[in-house]
Image 1 (cartoon, chains in turn purple, orange):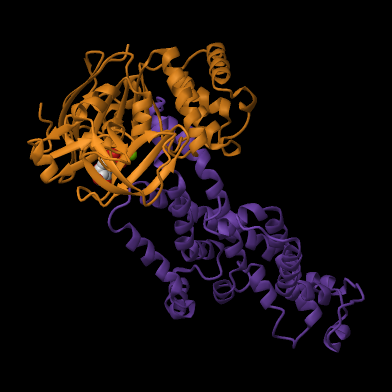
Image 2 (image 1 turned 45 degrees about the horizontal axis):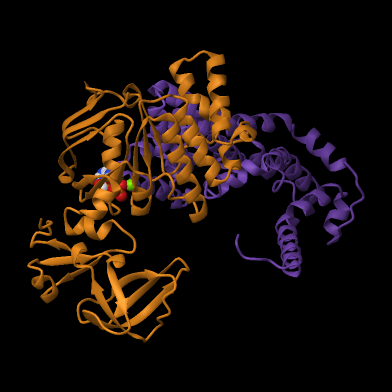
Length: 274
Length: 334
Ligand SMILES: Nc1ncnc2c1ncn2[C@@H]1O[C@H](COP(=O)(O)OP(=O)(O)O)[C@@H](O)[C@H]1O
Ligand SMILES: [Mg+2]
């Protein structure tokens, strides 16, 4: 940034940024606060100071085991991401390094599938899952989540690979690198950061996916998103318990996100920032 | 050794002929500059020599051996790219070592050459940094270092200075010239900047639309441009070119006079005009003379003491011995 920013301006922007961040983070913060309240406190109205009781957490754990949906979330998000990368790396590679006239169209077409509302294909997919016995199975959900996120994964990888300048590969060729040397010493190390941020972002997307996981699972394959949902309806609203369940569901991904902020920002800006 | 011969080398991209068949010999140890306007095919020609593009026709000989189908690595040439093309994930040391690693040189020999190159290029303190932590000039030196350690039979430079600011550019120009004096290895240097060409080259190859317009030493080109294109391209400020009555007077279609071959006087002379802009550089004064009825402006180089200003009426007289004459095709007459 060549523009000089005055001290006052800087302070102003910092305060504004904090306010925006707080507003965005507030629902999560309030869920955490509510999870530490008793049920009576929780429905009593707006109150930022809980009594710091862990009874909701105990209730959630005893009523509905946390460990199984947690493991399901891990398996679904990591599994679908790895599957997606296996399909998408060669695809994006081919499109980035030997594009044809139609490459852009194919990319747009893939992205356009993300513009369709998921409900539109609910019935066919539901029926396919029923007929093939994939309903409420981890393998079925893993494949589905992989397919859902594939367009984003291909797009992200494509943008990263495209950033690798052709002249660097030519320099390597002049320096005597064989195709294998090029892949091992130049391309892979340069592509790894992009692959890593794609992987992270996609794990988060898959972790948070709720529509399909709620529709297509009951108990066996239900991940944490479905686990939260199971607290929201049947026995009326128990806000403290619901908040405790939500907090437990988002905690792992929040922690992961915190430790990988830098990679994530790169991922979310699609490689626009170098 | 590093003699490079092009025989009928041509390049087509699909239907488009970027380089019509051309012949050129570059002698061992020569500093050859390819110069020409942007898009004239300089980079393409260099990349054909490097082996990064395949020729559409013709043969490339390196030290007398046919290298037309040899891979870039087998040609024994090193290239410095405009974008530097450093490996961003490797330290400076590893960047410089990379070609030696590929060639399988012993470790101690690699270290010896890295130290020597780093010392020559002022990079010793930066060997453990990544390219991203270096300035433009330093990156350029790393790229040169990576080229030197291979001890190639020729260096190829593609506009290596165009990403640097003006002051650095002059410094690097000298460094590259010194490098050539020290190594005495063949260098082929591509630029669109005729000043770089004039100051560095043993031999200049002027290109236009993929064709060689003239090959010669800087002074050859300056004193005896073979056609009007070379006349206008080489020299700064540009040569004044006239057509019409003035040219007819000398029996030519076009005549040209360099700014330093026109004398200026407030009293009298051959052509009358009025001063538009005058640039006083101290050592020289450049006068841009208008309203002569011969050309839009006539550029005149005069000594630094001239006190003429904007709006003054002046008389210009060309040095008759220094007038260049060109025929209808733009070719030099005698
Ligand atoms: N890979 C390519 N495919 C098609 N046309 C190309 C390719 N590379 C260069 N050209 C064309 O060849 C001409 C010469 O390009 P180049 O050698 O890069 O010029 P210069 O280096 O003199 O500026 C340009 O018109 C350019 O558009
Ligand atoms: Mg070029």
